[in-house]
Length: 267
Image (cartoon, rainbow, N blue to C red; front, side):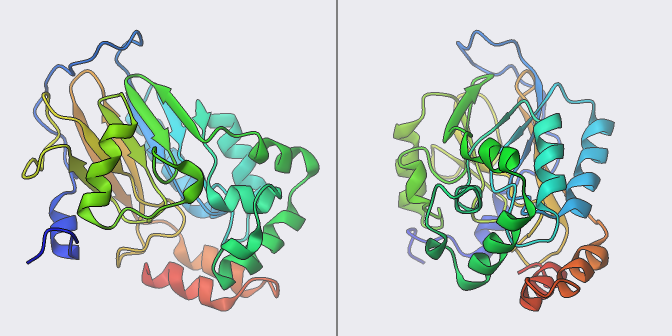
């Protein structure tokens, strides 16, 4: 099989979904080791976001980071913006955030995304839209890089599905780990082919999946927990009240019913 594309079975094998052997993280970062929670692609799904934060609170993390796309697709943009703003150490800009805030062309989104972006924009205050517009494209902290899509060209909104394209990204960040979202499918890739477990001596590109619209065949929300001291990464998958989130979409005439179907199917 050609190595330039990762089939779902291999992508699934790359997930680090359990706690790993404790190791010291090789780092020259001035930041102290911390236990991080990393969220992405919330997409105005309040039910999923609140469930994720309950789990994060139980995990006793030191800081929460958001990889963008706080808004889009679902019915509760204002509440999600406020909650992310309150709880997250840093938030980077996603393509749906830019479209809803008015700093990017809505037509660059898929048709359902365009309808949801217009809906979400009307639901937000000027201050909330300004908050989204002011988000940076990239953030670094604790020897980690945080970006919505790719570190090489953040505003190109590239989806990393091909192996060579993902490997090329390692030249564009200096930290040991780069966290990304955008594809809504969790995965872990090392800088060396055949390394499937996070450990010292390698660098990693980690996709934490989507809180608010998973697309890997399960409706369970997804986010990441990472310990920079023990070098432990866990991809967290949780049930939440999908029916309530889907019902809000179907009850809103400005949102396509197809978006509710996607939540229920995890596609």
